[in-house]
Amino acid sequence: MALMTPSEALVETLVAEKVDTIFGIVGSAYMDALDLFPAAGIRFVSVAHEQAAAHAADGLARVTGRPQACIAQNGPGAANFVSAITAAFWAHSPVVAITPETGTMGMGNGGFQELDQMPWFAACTKFQVRVNRPERMAELTRRCFYIAKAENGPTQLNIPRDYFYGDIDCQIYPTPDVKRGPGREEDVKNAAQILAGAKSPVILAGGGVSMADCVDEVKALAEYLTAPVVNTYLHNDSFPWGHPLAVGPIGYCGSKAAMRTIAQADVVLALGTRLGPFGTLPQYDIDYWPKGAQIVQVDADHRQLGLNRPVSVGIAGDCAAFARAMLAQLKSIQPGREGKQAILAEVAAAKKAWQDELDAWAAQPANGMHPRQLLSTLAQVMPAEAIVTTDVGNTCSMANSYFGSQNARQFLAALSWGNCGIAYGLAMGAKVGAPKRPVFALQGDGAYGISGIAEVMTAVREELPVIAVVFNNNQWGAEKKNQIDYYDNRFVGTNLNNPDFAQIARDMGAEGYRVQTPAEVKDAVQAALASGKPTVIDAVIDGAAEVLAEPFRRDALLPPVRHLDKYKHLNA
Ligand SMILES: Cc1ncc(C[n+]2csc(CCOP(=O)(O)OP(=O)(O)O)c2C)c(N)n1
Ligand SMILES: [Mg+2]
Image 1 (cartoon, rainbow, N blue to C red):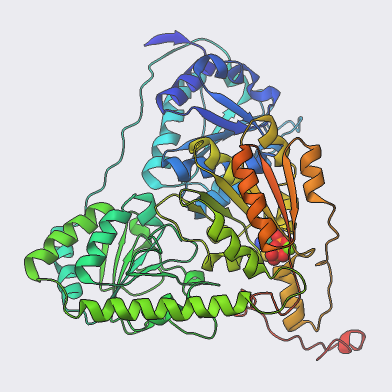
Image 2: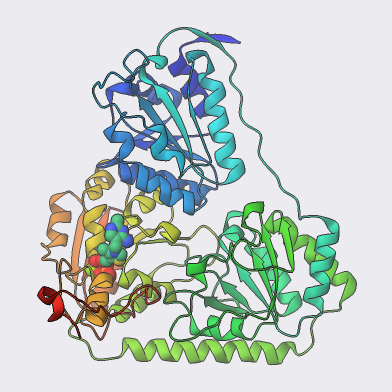
């Protein structure tokens, strides 16, 4: 035990958890702790809006695999975290939201910046706690880090602002790491029997594969089984597309090769995925989910087992440990699969057919640069070690077919929260975690306005050389596509009128390039990589109906039939 202030206890616990960077905006509520950050070796990255701070902590957590933190002023500052923390929740990303709050003597008095901020985070955290005595600061901070790490999700550390002060006796120590095993031996044996007996097994590699850093283990298993490997929706880094058994991602704007392949499966080995409804919806008129197939599902979180699909075997365990145990088990019961060359040839043919289709799309006439031309050019010029973050929008969705990764923790997407404005913040965090690797933030022009353009100031000030590519089609394209398909081209609120993003970037101290052709895209990316400075590539693309991808929520939109006279002229 040592005598310290609660602020010291907080900061020392952060240090014990190996936190070296915290994102946020300053506020009087936690000045007393903030003042210690430099001496503690913690870098405070000051952002333009707290949303980006939480996204950056999420990006850093996804790239490092360790829990990270963001901090904000009580009330409005903490409120600005909520959407981004929810994004981290659905991304299973361990982010500790540190939210100072009104002092204990003022709670309930209708004071300044006061609102009970625990309920805000109740539905988007794995755990939340209000520090109820200053003496418990270190203990409760530890708890937040432990649960964020153990349960893969955000937690909230809520601290009444007067509890940063005083003298306490306290012990500082780090939380234990959580290690999971391969699952019960008999379950692994059962699963091995099912896989060994399969005619056309397919491995579905989810986010859990990236989080367990077990791409190599999955490769070994896939190769032994000669099983094609599909990425789950928006987890393009769960298996490298260059592998001869890789067929790419299922889900919206994903790979038809993947969909056609999984449709044939009689057994699906689902690793680290809850088989979420949006990840398995029919696409391009392919109803690909193999409804008769047996499913072996492995997940670190037992709550995901059987959540969305009936499973033959559900295993709560670590994907890496499972993949190793499964390989050993398979080797003991089966010499490997026959017809390897034929399967590899089939996979290659499926991929080639899909690539030809993609190329034909990009070659279609457009008014200026076709979005797919931009995406395929970017994918060609990006260095293999680059980290890519993507946003939510029509062009970003198309990006799902263009950016595969060499390894885990390289493709960071908005995932199930689906909020526009996530990519730039994620990219800033990724850059902190991987300073030597190029980091690209891919964002639509609308999303860039939500959280992007203002954060370029952050990137310049904090020397985080993120390369933003803004898909400039002068519209909220994804929503406009709904108006095109369902509302007879009545455009309410979907047109944008953008300024010169490249010029604004330069005014903010970043590099800025406006590009309108694939050749200019290549030059701009190369210049950005060479400059080592935050860069905004304002990529002007066609946004016409013909180039937009089909709507995402076809499942939920109906052609309108109005009944009131006033609106009947809107009927088709
Ligand atoms: C925070 C938030 N607001 C609104 C939406 C609804 N939404 C989904 S896609 C989209 C359009 C995105 O436009 P843009 O970023 O310009 O990309 P584009 O579709 O044009 O490629 C909108 C508004 C959302 N997903 N998130
Ligand atoms: Mg747009």
